[in-house]
Amino acid sequence: ALDGAALTVRKFAADPFTVEDLVRFGTMPERVAELLRACVQGRLDILISGGTGTGKTTLLNVVSSFLPPDERIITIEDSAELRLLQDHVLRLEYRPPNVEGRGEVTIRDLVRNALRMRPDRIVVGEVRDGAALDMLQAMNTGHDGSLTTVHANTPRDSLSRLETMVLMAGMDLPVRAIREQVASAVDVVVQLARLRDGTRRITHITEVTGMEGDVITLQDLFVFDHRAGQDQYGRHQGALVSTGLRPRFVDHLADHGIIVGPELFGRGQ
Image 1: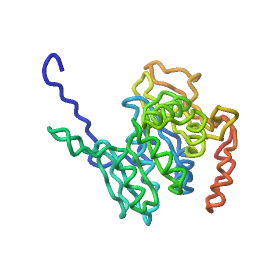
Image 2: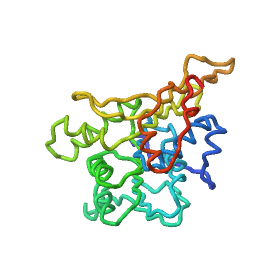
Image 3: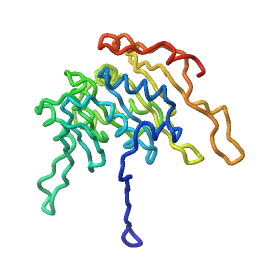
Image 4: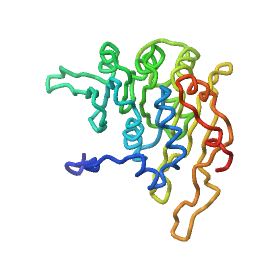
């Protein structure tokens, strides 16, 4: 800091926010909370995407509360911020190198070691480097239901960032192979944004449906309605509305005994 020391404080509430709090704040409607609960319990891999300060960690903490209490959960974070209330949680944290440049334990090291610790679920606070490759490998090798966050402005951008971060791992992989890994690993992208009035909202719930040629195909299930405009105080009047599309993962959830009714995806509601 050129002009003197700068201190940033990330302060979290003494009592972590619950899903009821986020519904009350308007971050998401109640039926989207029900959908996310079904996705977590149905062991879908969820990627939470958003810019800085959009509430990714808060939402990840809330979504993690849907994890069953009888499963072994391993959390991996750059700095420990998640507060899971389940009984069987193992928390791992990045360790920086000492003054001699030794002793560093990277996120990638933690993800690789977590795979040897028999986890039922892996929750990575944020992927920002080559750890993305190990995370995708974990999602594709039996660790279904994993959760992570990434910095990106749209669901499409979040998958592009994953591709870039896989290349940062130093593996000389063709782009198509990386995209096939991404399309196979990630099931749902939840996009967050901080709107101009300061509110944090979910703007997209997007399903990753597979590949067409060399392109990852997506379909939006819920999209924030910006056309509703603003009130006299500049507050957004829009809400997260369904596109009316039935997700392909509904059949997968049914195989796990989780029934999602069609009324959840009623168009325009």
